[in-house]
Length: 399
Ligand SMILES: [Zn+2]
Image (cartoon, rainbow, N blue to C red; front, side, top):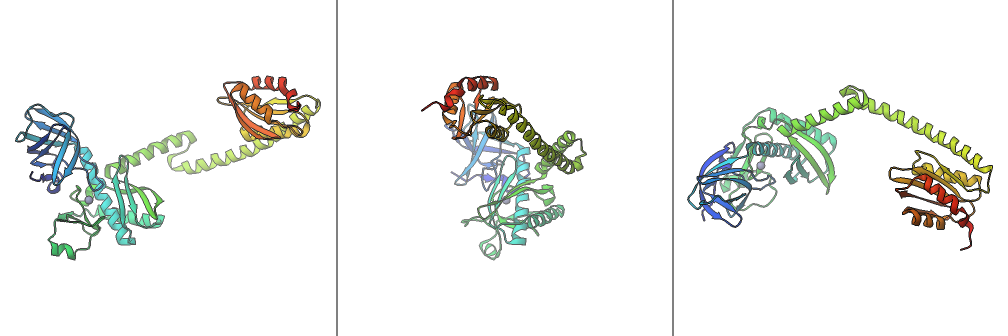
């Protein structure tokens, strides 16, 4: 079977093409064409989508793959009568393709710049749904990434034309170019003057200005190098719009202007820290007062319900009560799902009563002999208090 003429290699801006069906695989269903503008998945760039119009009807192209030089188009359904020799008109999803070309070319410019400036190799590349993932061979500092991003954008603004060709073996041997793997057969070289020379099978824009912008969104250490999330062109604009909308939301929540949100967050954080400090002190005073009250009848279990306590507050109250009375002490509070508890005793082991409480109310929790903590879903703190009053006598019962 003859190889497919790859129109996307020579005319990456062609959105449509007239062609002829070369082969049909009805089981998939899929068709091969004599020539196609559909780019098959490869080199980190996803396959094109679109429509194939046959004389007999149309079919959506769901995926595209190359096998031994033949480009196969996977269809949603094969219209009746389509066979080798049928005319076929290609129409690609241009928004998707142009986005891929912007991201792909931007990746070349940034990879080439990182290589030139710092000797970083690109060891992984994938155009994802949101951002382009780029893995580098070496760690890079924030300053190095900022410098590379600046120079990559200068290359975009210079609006230089790309040169893409298959060099003769002698020329190729003399050429310094980036490549992710050892290549066999003819090598397609993509040169972005001043920015990059790389072996690549993908589709690219014609001039660097069409990339629009290169923006590194995030950078983290990954396998001895960096994993970058990068957006170019339309995706950079969408990312900026997303950030602007979030800034507006945050500004409205903080009653701050969009460019003053960081100051406002610092202010709110300081207020929060001060309130937390004051809350800690007030809780201490409340727990002291409850302990003093419990101490007036030390033979009774000290069981208190205090709204709004977190686990740490429950723990503090139970231990404070246990300093005041010798028997069962319990701190209870309402939680989102039910009730939280902390049982403590200065003289007895509370683990048996905790197990009984958990069994009675389907609760979870445990701890040390003198202090156990947990929660019960679907019950009120009042129900737990009632149970504890009724069973406080069990605490010192012989085992
Ligand atoms: Zn490329």
